[in-house]
Image 1: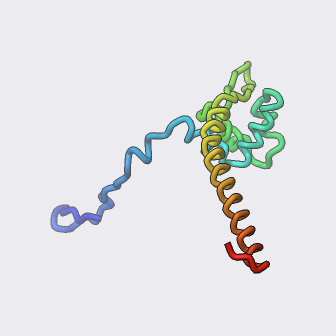
Image 2: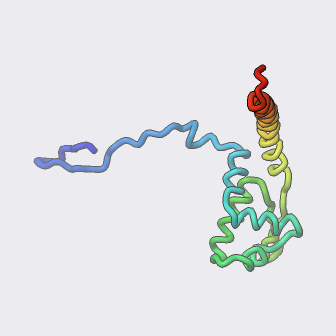
Length: 143
């Protein structure tokens, strides 16, 4: 907060500086948008629905106890992430799933699945060796 002289008095204005990291705040990529979109259970349910068949926004809104406006906002998030495409037919907006961004997210996650599987295999081997050593010590055999 800064005191700014105004005539004979000081104006206590909210002229403080906002500092943020532009790289963190603004460098969103498609993969980040996909993960942000699928973080919400309502949007995941919408994607499951669209995986079966294309649907209008009204059809997509039916199973949810939220406003049509809220469903429309969810659809915009999915659309921005590239997960769905919307086609306007008269007054109806028909949405269909675009699976490529999900495949790309899965490919990114797959790297880490392989990483953790190797680590778990190593842990399993270590535990088996230690268990064998303990069994040997329990029976009076020291290695």
